[in-house]
Image (cartoon, rainbow, N blue to C red; front, side):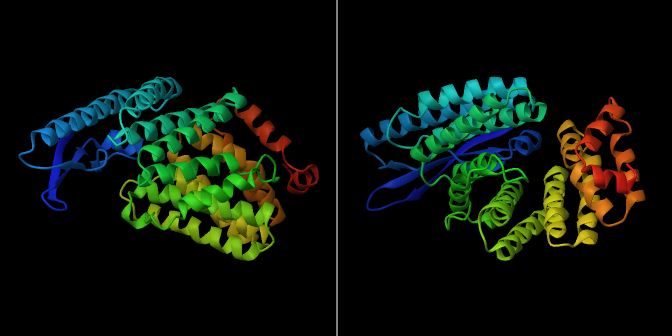
Length: 361
């Protein structure tokens, strides 16, 4: 359900401003899109002088362009809302083509930043799905870069578009974050991401729950990587990371529609932080909560995150002398999955042989 309307307010002198808006009442689409739900602006306000026919024609033209944007947005969301690789592929074709066409119509913002925003989203979501299947890492990397370019194009259309700023920071975090071995990271992109996400113009408390969660999780990852891989003030950086991860959990606990996957990710990294400073018992508490949330989520992404982090989690159990718990958790994790023996062997193959032997795995 989409309602299109506008706000008319006095400007300077004899001029007024028309601010087109639309309201999305479809909770399912809004939840998956994560960006358009409730009241949204459609481009920047249009300058208007009552009684001046020239201005009235300009307003009519500007409104037509904005409605063209909205029509393409709705068209693309029909594919985007499927939430699978094919849907994201079709959505990116609609969003990106329309953005490149309508974004060049004039120097004013006609709302095309929304098309660039979802062009970026479709690219990044498709990249994540490809990464999860490890089917084409080069294409996944290329799609992430295309997502960054789309967000940047949206900011050229409307430099004040907060959602584009936040999404650009999140995409740069994804590209720049190293693995736990400090490989394949880019500290320059992480610093650029931090600046976008901590920009004084971005007030997380004024944004939607999903956006706030994304900001805090990305900033947690940035400070974690800085402390682990790139800078010397490790304890201060990790304390900042811990604060951001805890903010994610606070949102999750207060939510009527909690995002278990994101909360689980925060718990996993809090577990890593505790393990790195020798707090093995607290690390296990966080890992246990993460695995419980991922089991509740139960989709392919959740299962992959659980199995990807299982070797680290089992190692911490073993280091803490909890061999029985390690074996129980491994059984719980693989039971019910397709090819459980293959998954078990893959997880165990990544464990340090001495740890594995000491734990009887």
